[in-house]
Structures are given as structure tokens and as C-alpha cells.
Length: 117
Length: 111
Image (cartoon, rainbow over all chains, first blue to last red; front, top):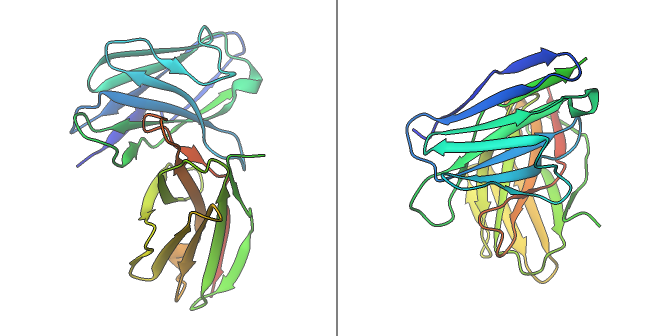
């Protein structure tokens, strides 16, 4: 149980295009999903917290108009990187927290590797 | 100062060795602590939570020193399959389950 999927697993795009990444909780409901970014040899950095049915909370320094987050259901959150540039190339990972419980383990998706040419 | 600091390594050890990783955190009000394991190009996976009393899971022992804001992970009888990056993770108080990750310590176990 507690499986989180991401799609696509990797994507290559041209500079200036937009890329949408999906994060799904497959066998549980997730009121909260988190989006992280990881550059090579660096730690995972939280970008935003996505709450079902409400606006995402962005971390300091993360542009909300560039990284659009939609959490329309208890099993799906999407991250859209708008007008992607080479510096946005990174490993994007989502995680999901099981609904209705106190702090517990976050379950991570397998990640999406984005390369912007 | 980073919120969570780790020695990046790499630690190169032979099979069967005992290896210890350390981590410090800056927010003294932090309440929850974890060790995650991340394989190359994969997502992190929870290895174990860290409790004030210390806890053990098989070959792995985690300890927390709140006074020194220090967390450790001890791996005994290292296996080749233990080769990975070990991430020290902290949930700061009031962070609504927000996790702060260290940059990780890389372990390479060789035959």
C-alpha cells in the first residue's frame, strides 16, 4: 500500500515550453502533497505544499506563477513548469501524506527528471 | 548556516564494516527526525525514524541528542546493498509536516 506514482518519469523539452508533471496516490487519499526539486549532488528542496481544494503554499524563493500547482482531487496533484528554461532542469519529486492522520511518513513518488534544452 | 548539515562523504568501506553518519540541525524546536535512503536517480525511502531514546532496526541504530542538535546513524555489518546516499531529515515545529532534507552522505560498500 501507500504507492505514489509520477508521470512522466522523464521529459526533455525545448526552452520556452511548458511541462506538466502528475503526482497520483494510487491506493490512498492524500489531502496534502508536497513538491520537491533536487539538483545533482544537492538535497531535496521543498518547493510547495499542495492542499486538496485550496491554493498551494510556496516556499520562499519559488515563483508561484512559474510553477503552477493544482490539487483538484484527493489522489492527484499536478505541477506545471511554465516557460521552462535550462536552469529548471532538475529532478522533481512529489510526496503524499495520508489523509486524516497526524504526522506520519510521507510517501514519495519515483520522481520526474526534466531536461530543458 | 544550512538547516540540516551532513558530511557528504563518500564513505568507502569494505563489506562487514561498521560505519557511522552524523547530522546536525539548526532549529532547536524541531520535533521529528528521520533517516531516509536514496539510491542513485531514485526517490528517497524512509529508513527509520529517530527517537530521543535511540532506536534500533536490525543492523541500523539511530540516535538523537537534542542538547547538541545532533543525529546519528550507525550501520553494522555493512552489505553491498547498503551502498546509497543517506539523508538526514528533520520536521521543524509548526512546519505542517514539512520536511527539511540534508544533502546526504554517500556510502559505498565494496567487496
